[in-house]
Length: 128
Image (cartoon, rainbow, N blue to C red; front, side):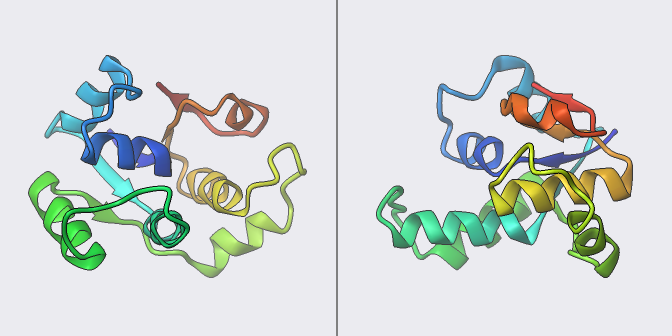
């Protein structure tokens, strides 16, 4: 199955955070799944690090590259089609990072792994 990770799911998986559900952890770890990460997620993580919300024990770029390689995550590039869908989304969710993730999932017709129930207001399948 192809699926897109919400930023918190990605971060909680990489940091082995207890907030990640057991089901979500097993979905991400299942090597038969094609786990995709949007550039918006590593951008959002960089912003959170800059704001002091998270600290890493190694430089950000090294951490991301190492973890993506180790976990065999693929990057889902942001396309013009993804951005165009953002233009049409109702404002159920105001977070610009999440709105782009929703648009990407809609365009690619793939589920998003997220605990954010606001995603349910859109035409996207949410896993948790």
